[in-house]
Amino acid sequence: MALWLFKEEPGEYTYASLERDKRTVWDGVTNALARKYLRQAAVGDRVFFYATGKEKAIVGEMRVAKVTIDEDDPKGAVVEVEPVRALVNPVSLAAIKEEPALADWELVRLPRLSVMPVSEAQWGRVEQLSAAAVVSRDG
Image 1 (cartoon, helix red, strand yellow):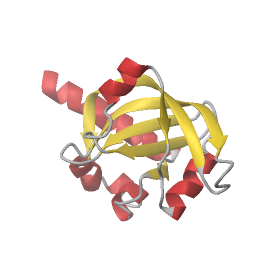
Image 2 (cartoon, helix red, strand yellow; image 1 turned 45 degrees about the horizontal axis):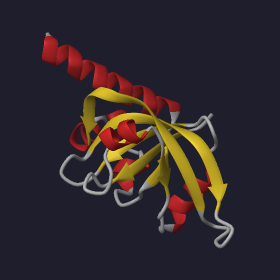
Image 3 (cartoon, one colour; image 1 turned 135 degrees about the vertical axis):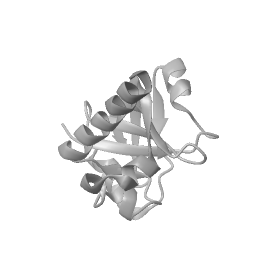
Image 4 (tube, helix red, strand yellow; image 1 turned 90 degrees about the vertical axis):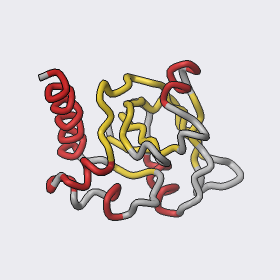
C-alpha cells in the first residue's frame, strides 16, 4: 500500500463534497510528474486530501477505490477515491513548512505539483501535527 497526497482547489471540489458524494473521480492532471505518480496509485492506497487556495491545508484522508488507465492517453490515469475521514484539525502548509522533518517533502519543494507520494514518516508526522493541534486547542 502506498501513501499519496492529492491537491484540489476548494472552489472546484471540497472534502465535504467527497463525503456527500461518497466517491469521486480524480482526473485532469496535466503535469508530467504528477501524471506519473497518479498512474502509480493502486486500489487501497491511502491519500491525503490537500485543499489549495486560501485553505492551504491537509484536510482529510481518502482511499483509492479504482484506477483506470486512459485508453486514449496511455500516460494518463483516472483514479476514483472515497472518503475515509476528515482531519479533526487540518494541518496547514505553514505548519508543514515549519517542521524540519517535512522540509524535503515535495509539498514544500515543488509546491505546484498536484499529486505526490508521501513517505510513512511524513504521513506519521502529519498525523502527529493534527493530533497535537487538537490537544493544544483543548488543553
